Length: 525
Image (cartoon, rainbow, N blue to C red; front, side, top):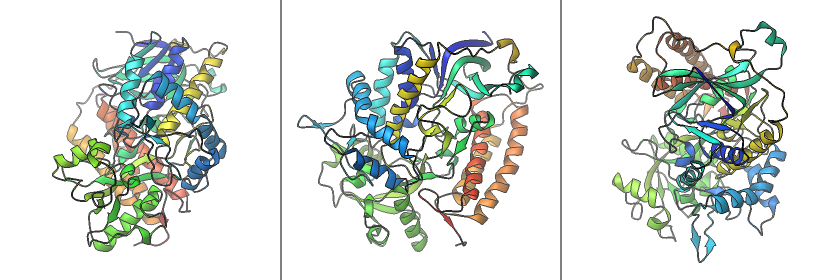
């Protein structure tokens, strides 16, 4: 097995953003390698997305869509980015998802059956019932597998970005502008670490919500791309803004299965355990208020009444065929003894989407030369302080295309060489300790509880200071552990978890203003 490989473009992550970039690059003849730490293409947040993908309708005023995004973001969005995503939404969704990939979006009488979700003023959300992400992800990989210029490597985990001057043994590199030249990658099958060199690197590694106790994300969504970018000295922004989805299924055996916002869009109402419909007390938009408002309202009701959950009543208000519109939600709830056609669903908020991430421009370019960031790992400015529902999949498509186009325009003309001999091969610890899974599990659970209790839906300065102190000690201990033990997915994930958690807490401490998905109280409860 070689110790290094080369490619024109390395893409880290295989969700909708990475897949869109890979498709665009490969079809233009660019040698592209996409890596994913999952066993197959389903190991992404995209695959779990239920609600849909928003796009500007043919007869819709763009200002309506722009206004909805800005209001949800508490007006601190980067308006130029918002205008870009709205302007390009209809065209790119049609060209890529509808015409090229043939995603089977739901129709009614020959027309797309558009959904409406919280804080949207119009029905503009394309969906495949409640399994939109799964349909998009499957359609992408059915198409990507036949592209000759694309290599897809599953069971490959990025450990760290390779950057100049940091990873060069040539001291003269210190005078050069920092740039990305690839990544150290763990091959999970051979258990060896390779160097994969690239002219351009795209981070599309997803979010970090699984650093919280309750999350709708896959277990390994711990902000690995953010941690790598931080170590690579890229600029980060808005990490304090963490969107909690108001409604995940509350059941001891169900994990945190998402109950789509589209359920409330179809008329479902929230009730506390005393039988009171309560959302009108918190927002004139009631159940269709932005997610942060709904999450805090549920949190307030739970605290007020000492409850672990509230109820979401679809059965009493639905005017649609519930089983036909929400087959995945219906089947999953029924598996746990809850017939949503007859009774309310027990729900609790869960960490769902990281608004902040690696700061990038309209083409996905970061502050590190040759490094791009797209999708949830990035901060484009679209979401401001709070993401509007079903805009994240759209962001992945738009920035996936634009980053790829920028690379296509510049990769051939760039005189930006790297020297392989300057970058050392991976150094394995000697002697190497065997990984103790009990230690890893305990540290991960500790991080999750710290983040949930001290840096969750409602924060205070005292809680955040406690989180910062506890996490700093934990990071020191984990880094010592990391340096001595065998390299595995679990130890990489643990190291990235604690680093990302510290960044989120530090960002929350700095920002004293409650806004959107960051809510900090002046006094303790």
